[in-house]
Image (tube, rainbow, N blue to C red; front, side, top):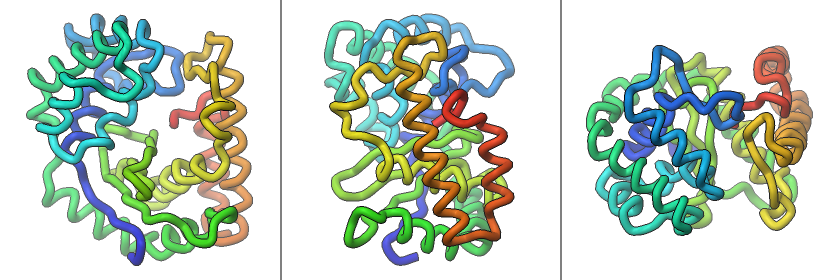
Length: 253
């Protein structure tokens, strides 16, 4: 697809694979998949909650393509985690990467099959929605869609230069993966500038959670209008997705 790359990233596999083993509780950033936590999860959770820049950990796996560069960054300093509590979190996460990360990298052959299934089912819809979502720009930026099964029903997004990087699980039904991917990329269109998101918090009991909920609701509303206009055959699936995530109150993105 022109302007869209669908790929995998071992660093993302490991980062989200580890985060999915840590129960953050009533937190929109919680990726915990159940099944019980390993012994190292408790100390990591405490370090996560203590670090003001903890949300950097939710995208650090997308900033690095391979494990070697992820490990180096966690040792040398990660954006948002350079204060003392942030360095402690990066160190704890780096230890988990070193000890347990090797077994979390996805199989490239299985990824290739998932990518082919996704492209055949909804690849053209993704192209059209990606192009149509950037209403405030002359053209949509390049999109790198990272397949990361450990994300489950959630998604993440960040930037690599002028490339918008979105991660979702292609192990899900193609239309579900499509809707989550579109939601993640919409945030780049609807989110206010970072300076206006001061105090945003993903923990449900935090004062700044209302800011997070408003941001999510804006993206959800934009997405509903976009789907209805560009791919109306997916509107029922989008409505089911909104019912599942519950709007900004519980959206895990």
